[in-house]
Length: 418
Ligand SMILES: [Zn+2]
Picture: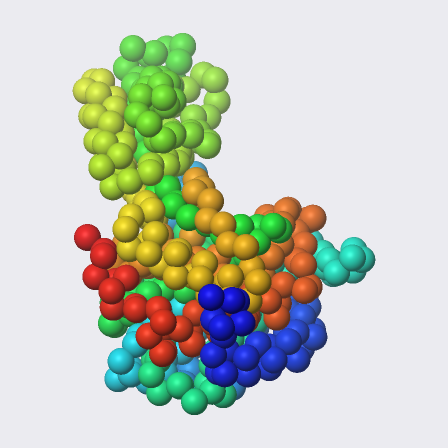
């Protein structure tokens, strides 16, 4: 079969429309990148959310901005504080259509205000700027692909739930509930718009990611007059940290990293507080459970020290997304859609995590790097390839068209989930 035979008339119409929309997608992405939406910049997030909602109002859908869940963060002094983020964009269309899709993306970036603001044309079709790839560009790809799909005749076959979050770069703690809810409202597959690699390669299997805080309390005492009355939280923490790092290499694909230790005070005071912050990654659910058990055992051991109390916060906030049969079937289907428009598709396993992990954990197979081609993300060298806007929007439109006319059997793919 030739590639042309793989294109329906609907496909051809969408491709043409999305070619024409390329310049507008680029211009809007650049415009969006001018508002700083660093994950902790509440003012910037609140300013930007209505702009986003307005753009998505072009869809034949119900568009709402909703407050996220308040979440807790352990402070350096070992207490918990409540954190508020920007609104979550929720878009819902045709909930009774036979094929339901969950789509997601984020509008926060890793850049605090004033750190990286310039948008620079690097030449050769590359633009450098904050969030152009990760992922304001991807949001435009999602939006235009849906507009193209809705302009076609198969619109009524597909309904969708979109969640665009303000807190992906810090772990989706405020929006995880919204992602799960959207995924579990009947979605057969998920489509998330993280950038793919510069080469066009997309993410295959993803590890799970955990963030933990351990708070240890000891007993303060004067180090000279009454050292024996004190109980050092730092000493307990030190043994625990060494134990955590020694877990590395004990199980395939599982890694631990202690990122910071806070606590203590003057050198003449036995320290009564230590806060250990660390991360863990695991390739599958069993490995994640193993990691969690090891951590709890180390904490239990620390708490057998006289006068030491403490507790563990956190866990695998993004469960692993292994390349199971459902994922592989979806990757194959997406590859077919890509080949029809001349894309050589490749899926590469990664230790990185994203909303695709959450959607997978909610029981929905998904592909999560449907955004623009780009690179150097999370650095001031972040760039986007401008010719990827039309290309990647067309890829999404091909997937939607195939889901709508049955060339991709969403039900069959979903049924492969354990
Ligand atoms: Zn991202």
